[in-house]
Amino acid sequence: MKVDLRLYALVDPAVAGGRTLPALAKLIAGAATLVQLRDKHGSTRAMIEEARALKAVLAPAGVPLLINDRVDVALASGADGVHIGQTDMSPQDARRLLGPDAIIGLSLKTLAHAQAAPLDLLDYVAVGGVYGTTSKEDAAAPIGVAGFKAVAGAVRARAPGYPVCAIAGINAGNAAAVIEAGADGVSVISALSLSPDPAAAARELRAVVDDALAKRGRA
Amino acid sequence: MKVDLRLYALVDPAVAGGRTLPALAKLIAGAATLVQLRDKHGSTRAMIEEARALKAVLAPAGVPLLINDRVDVALASGADGVHIGQTDMSPQDARRLLGPDAIIGLSLKTLAHAQAAPLDLLDYVAVGGVYGTTSKEDAAAPIGVAGFKAVAGAVRARAPGYPVCAIAGINAGNAAAVIEAGADGVSVISALSLSPDPAAAARELRAVVDDALAKRGRA
Image: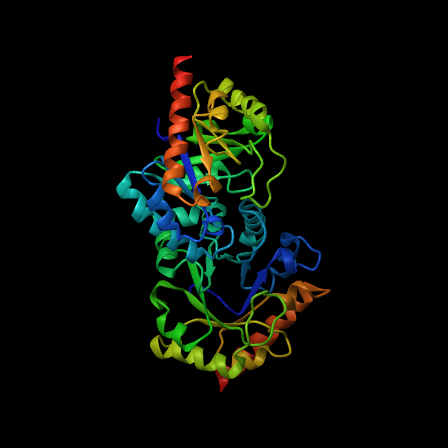
């Protein structure tokens, strides 16, 4: 698999618990398998600077960095790819601009999204919001574990084994349920960024995911 | 000159006077020499769609389309270039991503900006805000015609004849003053977009600019 979704950490200056993003990345880099920079409020120049600072921390740790929405920021900073939503650049345009080696992920929430997604142009999909969240301003009603299972199932009916992570409101207490429901990993923000000890929180959540994946493998 | 700055029209869905951007572009394309799409609120996908619709109107008229800030939108839509501000992507990154043929302009307000601008990587600079404006949310105190003259003078002390346009609060009543002060053209938004007759307003403003340029040429 091109991308390891087990512990996919979003970092966002608006949800950073008073830490700088590189400091936060340093704390979680030992457990996170993938990091995404999201910044819906900063200037383009600030976001490029954030991306470069994150890349400097994450590249030596072997953790890929994706950029939320902004292909320009990914190209300028040398990030490993982008995560796009349904109102961001189309996957077709993003793949054309970023090339075959970039990692590109897409957010899905509905069965219609799952049917329409150009899976061959993408490396993974993120399905959610599974649980309620406080870290996204425009979050709508969550789809729950049952909704996750239905959307992920629709993706894998088209492409067996396709990489899918679950997103929104996930923490060490509810992560096992989405792994049992078929997720390859969890995408989180507040559970790490707003923890008093992000390094410990990342290790704990990664252990929960790894255990649940192992249990599923044995089932 | 690679770029004709005489009547440089910004179009912005937030300042469109109830018209669609392609409809507005169609009205002004006969007089405008350059058009810039600015959209600080829409999604990336919406902005790419706006850019493609504008390009379809402007390309047959031979009027280049630039994108404010967003190099990703310019690349995806096939626009002719970008206009960047001091907190957008750096001119160095923008030129690297867009290539040698793209048109790239930069906003300058101060003598320090004029000294720092990498003029050889840019095609023009826009100096202002000259007059007060209502169409930019974060507009600070205007620099006036004297301020314009000082900043444009600092640019041309480094590069004689360098393309410079004036921006902010310009209309048919005050455009001649900035041309007399050395501008190659005027960058406007409200004067056209919020006019009851944008086509007539564009023709009138273009005539004012052309007359003032001719007068300056004879002086």
